[in-house]
Length: 399
Length: 71
Ligand code: SF4
Image 1 (cartoon, each protein chain N blue to C red):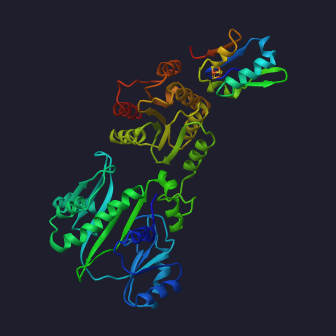
Image 2: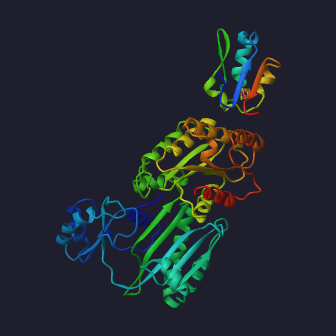
Image 3: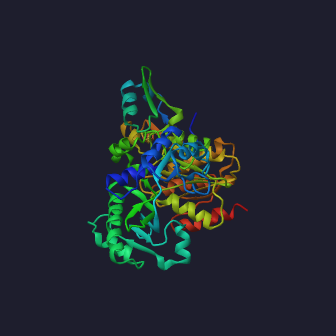
């Protein structure tokens, strides 16, 4: 769940991170008043949930309060990845000597959080990683054991920062690591982290993403920030397909068959189990397949739930076949999912053997499930076929 | 009417037993049996949800059949 910049900064302020003076404005009058309070040049930033604001004209500079008032409407109207601003953050324009990049995120491969630090901030960090890898450090730390400022110091010094800059940056990096862990974040990023001409460091721009499932643990913080319970904070509003997916999931308490995300491919996916959804989605793409959707099934969904999800995916325009694939299951029953997807195909007026490209769900009650698939002529495989290979088989059938 | 994958049949005489009906309705985890004044009836829309747990068979030995239509 992504936070707006002003919310991220409110969280940083709670932790005494160095921030410039700023106010949130919801009208031209408020923008004018905020600029007047700052009493100097200001930067005005549209509050949207995606990057690329500068290019879209959603960030502008004003030298006077009147200019700030005049810029409010065009900034609010500027479209950034399909979104327009919910308000404008008016902040003092700081005299910057150098920009740094700082981020704490989760490294899925290392199964640990990682600090990414660069002395080349303000630009695309992927580009820095590619063209100047020596200017980007990656420092892992434990999410279980106590952390110390030494890790933060290592991250900063690894790119050659030393002396008083190192001493000033270390507590900022350490604080961000603590914020990342304390609020169950998936990303805490400051870019740019600026060194001012007088040698101080301040957070110029930053954003955080919270693990959506951790919302319940942070109700007090969310209430303090004014985040409403119904706000999904996705980068775009849900599509009709996604809304219907949620309805399928909510209509029956048994198991999960939801978290549907729409894509524009031709291969529908009924996937899940223990990280299986992401792995399988990636595998389909790696084989050159075009997923029509992402979804998550697990926790032993009922036959009806698997059936309704299958029908929803098959009804999506452009879907030619579906691939039913999961990691090895223990609490989800293979035969129950097999019944559901076969029934979904038949109720959609389609022959399961024609539309199920592959069924790869090994685990509990698989013999029973395989009997159902055999009866309907559906190609299936057990755990001797990897998820990657199964995805390849499905893609190969797409012609 | 049977389900697509499962059919459940109750012996005609046993189906009129209201006490047995209550027992079957209680043990089935997916509500395939409904107990009424006239005995037990089968909830057809739930037939395919049968978990093959055999609890109904244990509750009424020899009086209930759970049939896998895919075998
Ligand atoms: S086997 Fe279990 S789920 Fe199936 S009808 Fe009997 S009690 Fe219900």
